[in-house]
Amino acid sequence: MKLEQSKLTYERNDLAPSISEDTVNYHYGKLYKTYVDRYNAGEGDPDFNEAGAFLHSIYFAQFQSPTSSNKPTGSIAEFITKHFTSYEKFKDEFETEAMKIQGSGWVYLSKNGKIKTIKNHEIKNDIVLLIDWWEHAWVLDYQHDKKKYLDNQWKIINWNIISGRVGLIVKESQLGIGFIKEIKESRYIQSEGDVKISYTSMCEALYLSVLAIEFISRTKKGQDIAERYARQTAAYSLYDQFRFSSTDMYNFIYFVNASPDRAAKIFNSPDAKSLREKTHLPLMALNGWLISLLSPSNRDLGFFMRLEQALSISSSDLKEIRRMLSYRNPTDSDVSNMAFRILNAYRNKMPQFDLLPDLERICNDKISYIY
Ligand SMILES: [Fe+2]
Image (cartoon, rainbow, N blue to C red; front, side, top):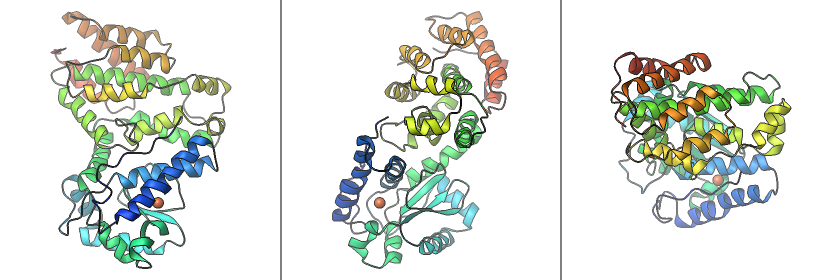
């Protein structure tokens, strides 16, 4: 899988004086780009370059023009008060942890409300707000004064973006993308040689969840659920090319599309390895599908076929659900048959998945299907 440098959502001189145009030119224009280019060219340490690209994509996505009154609002404000009692205390604690870093690194607010640090580069799945603590991030504008650098970063944080990342936490618990959590964990567990779930079940889980969300979005009661899912995942863009990409989705893709070297470390089973090699996720189509949840009339049904092929789905049950979703004018009994199948597949394949209660609620009453 090739990496792509994420695009800036502001001009290079918009962040001054918190971050000067020269620093953006050098940091974004040269250093970040180099991680992407070197990774794609297979030069240097791929893990280091990939993690560098990953962290910079999160870092540069979270800024806007400076204002001295800039303060957290919305869900992130609540999140900070809950974990740190106040924004001032949060900033103090952030600074304390940052100043402890020796050498190159990063400091971040994690999804569970802790301030954590990263030495050099490392991919982390729990980043909410991230500050680059490598010398290149501050030396040009602040010389030795790292404290001042940090103080001025607070003026350019786009708290809507940060709230979107916190929104994802809400989404995980309310909508239950729990199975992808399992994928996420399994990636690490598998790398240590303790295989927990099979690759085939992961692919089936992803596919079933897409089918189920599609179904939910077509019911009157489920529209807001699907819309929330679409908005929250879209808000949480890590890599530009994965606009749909929540951390969960990212991890899934990362898992599926891992480089052969890493795949060898991840997968023990030869079967899983060969399956993975055949997998090419239709990323743009996944993205398009997610966006289409916001406008239900405009659906690409071919997408499901492509995803099914990409994930090598062989379950006849899942294929049948996909066929039913493509019915032009389903009768009431088609719809209840479809609901019954999706619900059953969920209960069988993903009993832990916490989208299940929503699905049950929708399916237990008379369903008004609006597609
Ligand atoms: Fe950097």
